[in-house]
Structure formats: C-alpha cells, structure tokens
Length: 310
Ligand code: CP
Ligand code: NVA
Image 1 (cartoon, protein in one colour):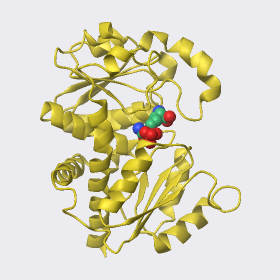
Image 2 (image 1 turned 30 degrees about the horizontal axis):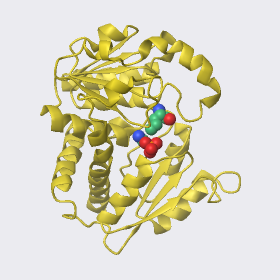
Image 3 (image 1 turned 90 degrees about the vertical axis):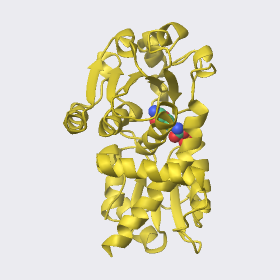
C-alpha cells in the first residue's frame, strides 16, 4: 500500500499526476467525492498548526468526508498507547491517517502498522505536503517546473530544506540550498536528491553563500530559523543565521521576475524582511491556499491506488 511520508515516495510521473489533479480540483472543487459517506480521515497533531489543520479539514470535507482532528494530548497515543497499537486501531475505522509529529521514525512505524494510507503532514525531517503546494504555486506563476532554479536560504537541515531537495529534484528543478555549514541537509538525503535529479534533468547544489544561491534564481524561498521543538536554541540560531535573511537587496540578485515563497508562519525581520514577504514578488498567500488543492489531490490519488490494489 502506498503512503506519503517523504517527497520521493512519489515518482516524477506520479508527482506530475498529483499536481495535474490538484489543478483540476482547484478549478472544480467538488468534482471528486472519494470520501462520500462521509468516511472519516484521522488528522493527528503532536505539534501546533494553522494551515495544515484548516486545509486538511476543509479538503476532507470537500471530498465528501469527515475530518476527525485529534489535537496534542487528546488521545492515548504517547505514554499510554504505542504508535503500533494506535495505527492498528485507527486504520480499522478511518480511510486515511494524516499525522504531524516529531521524529520521522514515528510516522514510519505508523505506516508499517496501518491498513490505510498514512500522510506526513510534517515531521522533523520532511514536510512533503508543503512541497506539493509549493510546486503547484510555482507552476501557476511560471508555467513548467523542469529547468527552473529555486534558491532556499536559511536552515537547510530542517524539514523544509530536506523536502525541497527531494521534491524539487523530482520535479526536474535546479535546487540551491544555502545555509551555514552545520545546517546542511543530511548527506543521505542529498545523495537521494542527486540520484533523482540525475534522472529528471534537475540538480542539487549545497552552498554557504546566500548571494551565490540567489543569483538569477526564478524562485527564492526561506523558512523559520527556529522550527517547532527548537525553541530553546532560539538565541544561538538567530545569531548563526543573521546573514541568511531574505532582504530586498538579496531579492535583487535573483531574476527580475523571481517569486518569493515561505511555507509560513513567518517571522518578519528574522528570516525575511517585511518588504519582501509583503511585497509584489511574494506569492505566500497563493502558496498557503494551494495546500488545500494539493492535499485534496494527494488524498484522491492515494485512495485510488489503494482501490486498484484491492
Ligand atoms: N506551513 C504549515 O505547515 O503551516 P502550519 O504549521 O500552520 O500548519
Ligand atoms: N520548519 C518549520 C515549518 C513549519 C511549517 C517547523 O518545523 O516548525
């Protein structure tokens, strides 16, 4: 059974198909009702969320289903019940499991013990639903994806940096990741992204200089310097990442028609200047809305795959 835990769980052809379906559903939101019943989708949060919560709840409802939201601390999962037992129980009733958690191994265990597809809605290592939404947004603003250059500036060791490497390579894009040396993506993830890029015509470049990364890029991206769970490191991180703020001067090094993206929530005057995120090149609100359309497409696709197997 297919799950979506990492960006490279979709082949290039499958990723393109999900994005095509996302465009179809954006144009005609109620065209597909695979959850008609309504069937339940369990959406579990071990960390806080605005976009993921709203977009999955609305998306499940518009596919004809019922979104069962389980907030941090509301279920037996954790101290009282194992991930394995939770997966076995929930997947007897729900049609899909969507989970935001910490260590990536946790969602792997959930998927291994689930009878229904499991979707990663953020772990410490990856945020693949966000990358699908970003790809949809780039397509809308730039046309094709293959051959475009995207520069990600900031914490490249976090879930966004690592997911951009895999997901953008899958789309045949040239992805540049600029960060302090100690905040580069994991070596095995870069190796996987390079292997994918070799097949799609894309490329992955890991570097330290934000100006070199951004030069002539079509897309400039950043994310918080302090991800959920890293709050105690804030002071040190703010000092380390100071040179990686996306400012108007940095944006001026990119292509004239470059777009700016951020998965949000954003911390103005830390990773991005207000003039950039609130300026004419920013597409962050399209990006946030596209979570809905991309995730609806993903859910339809995973349910279809499961049906075909049965
Ligand atoms: N981008 C994103 O996942 O936002 P939330 O944390 O608000 O869900
Ligand atoms: N890197 C951020 C993404 C938030 C959507 C975090 O993990 O907190």
